[in-house]
Every structure is written in C-alpha cells, then in structure tokens.
Length: 201
Image 1 (cartoon, helix red, strand yellow):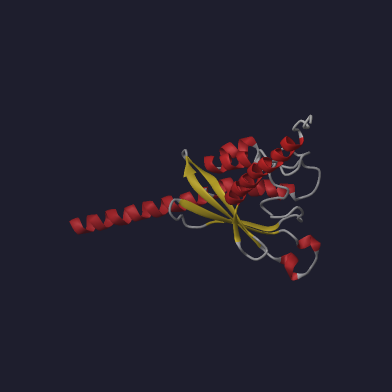
Image 2 (cartoon, rainbow, N blue to C red):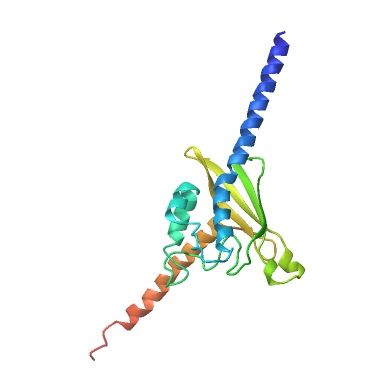
C-alpha cells in the first residue's frame, strides 16, 4: 500500500512538473508574440505608424534587464543622425532594410532548458520580390526567453546570416558600443593637435 501511495505521489509530482513546464513554454510565446505582431504590422503596408519594438515601454515589459541595458547603451550611438533613436539601420527581426508583408508566420516554444525557453518564430519575408526559390525561403528567428521578476521576458534574439551562422543581438549591441567607444579617442586627438597655437618663433 505504501509503495502504491509513493508511486501515485511520484506520478502526480511528474504530472505537475510536466504541466508547469508546458505552461511555462506556452507563456514564453507571449513576449515573442508582442514583438512579432509589431513586426508583421510594420511590413503589412498601408498607413499604420511604424511600431518600435524597442520603445521604452516594451524594454521594461517584454525584455530582460540585461537586454534593456545593452540596448540603451547601444542607442547612445544611433545608426542615422536624423533618426537619433535606433542603433540599427535595419529591421533586426527580418534582418534587412526591406521586406514584403510577412507570410506563414508561426510561433512555437521549445521545451525549457536550464531555465531558458527557446521560442522559434518562422515566416517568409520576400515572397513579393519574385518566384525564385530564394524569395520563398522560410526565415527562422530564435528568441531566448527567461523568467525574471515574476514574468517571462526575452533575453536575446538570435538570427542567422546569409551563411547560416547564428548571430546574437546582445553580442551585436555590445560590439557596436565597443566600436563606437574606440572611435572618439582617435577623432579627438586629431583636432587637439590642430588646435595647438602656432609657435610664435
């Protein structure tokens, strides 16, 4: 009887754990859906305003603190002077400056691993550009979702370059800051040399 009770307890515990993991995986799609909904709207055409997926409210609500801090650091160096906001001169989700209305958009959470749930977003972004196979390819973006402050948030966005190599957006932002911080040193030394007063002799 005790063995039966123990087995039942273990089974119940397993079911509870499995249910919790399934719920966690399902909830992990929520912040990703917010990002993808905005991206779909941005490329849908029409007169709707462009939605910044990194505006202040989204940085607080759907991204991790570490991601937000790295974005704010990178945003100190906007990609376009007239923009003055984004450190990127392209859409980081479609990995391009131009795209068609997104088609076949799907969002699926993978089983959690080491407290990270990977959520895959797949879509076609170039179908309006032609019928060639390259324009019909499916793009996959991986979102790393973690639990922080009692809610699930995006901690990184992983895209693939043209050669299929993965690229972490957090790493891209860190590299951008490093590159920009190195430039002022070189640039400020030249003017200081030029501004030295001429030798009166």
